[in-house]
Figure (spheres, protein in one colour):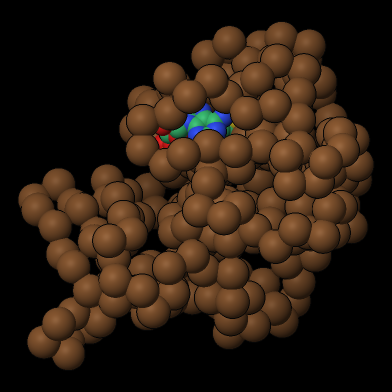
Length: 248
Ligand code: BT5
């Protein structure tokens, strides 16, 4: 395991913004920014991420990948897997991954991942992997537009120690990310994603900027793309990006 340098804030706008600022000024691989409360938490594409004060996990990990053969979708999925495994280790619950970046308990969103990066040409300079987990309080229903939200508390019946859960998530992340043979791009990791994938084999709709496609969800590729089987038997692959996955 690597030892992360942790910079904690009681209140901050967004841990991802702070991590990006630090990464751009040379902060090293493994530094983690955490906060008890975010006032301007972000989701993908400018969406709002609500952080219930003093009861959630909001953290952003700075990574400087050794290889440029890395896709942000892989890191989102890996972040989600680490969250799911960390939650399972601490609570016994078995969360699922909703491609590309959500963690669900019984179809409700308990956590979200936001991977952002800076490139120098084709080479990744740094990645900021932001993770938000609803631990002891759920966000108010009015901030949730699409997937219903939940937190861990109603499922465990007890308050969860946020530091313990954060450690568990980071340990699981490290054990995959720094694995020589079961890391990003490996068949082992791809199988672990698939084993946790929400809606596997179920009818889904993928909504893209130019329309939508319906089919059965087949799985994910080692690059983190979604695969679907369409009604005519053909297969389609989707890159994460401005794409939404919906259950039908
Ligand atoms: C995400 O975006 O799910 C990524 C969330 C990443 C948050 C972390 S917290 C630490 C770090 N610092 C940041 O500023 N961000 C990262 P997306 O898939 O775009 O989902 C956003 C949507 O989820 C919103 O439009 C709401 O509908 C919903 N949402 C907002 N807050 C939520 C919450 N606490 N729990 C569940 N759903 C939420």
